[in-house]
Image (tube, rainbow, N blue to C red; front, side):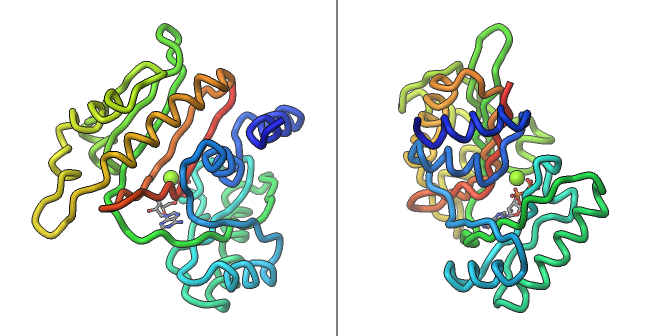
Length: 231
Ligand code: ADP
Ligand code: MG
């Protein structure tokens, strides 16, 4: 059994459909998608120790099977610059989570490396009732939510097809580089799409997947949030 099999088996055993961010990111790592370093802290002392090991700045996030949209619950603190700030964030995140949902099981707080700012893009997958596993690509924020500027393709996909999904967006010029913004690494983003398509084909029990956002850089990309929902 590989790590992905184990994580899915464990979720099934606990009757959970939503994987934790840490679980979804471990699955990403296993299929070769790079994510910032992370570790779950059970208490504030551990949070500070993990942060010292990773290095600053740090991002801290709630880990709870009942809290899927972490920001909505006041469960995300970014740009923490030292141990004192990490400890403060730990306390605030736990308090916010309890306020948001008194019944939520709190596993801990995910302490992670803060990725440098980049162009935010989204890779998703859904299981279409008619076409089966389908992957999606779009730019972050208003581009997806307001302008619906996204492209879909039925999995599996080739690297060339992945590139077409990216270059075919209306907002593609933003990725090609403009003014002082360097061009994003289209190849790295296309590789992620191909890997996600393969993952959802290999694991038909994945009903939904969301890498939102991925920070795209001139060289490479960092997947800073990952969500996987099982059937
Ligand atoms: P949510 O569950 O609300 O989607 P996210 O994990 O996406 O939570 O975090 C909210 C926002 O915080 C992200 O959209 C991103 O802008 C920022 N963020 C989260 N994790 C990181 C990270 N490791 N490095 C840099 N920015 C991050
Ligand atoms: Mg997110």
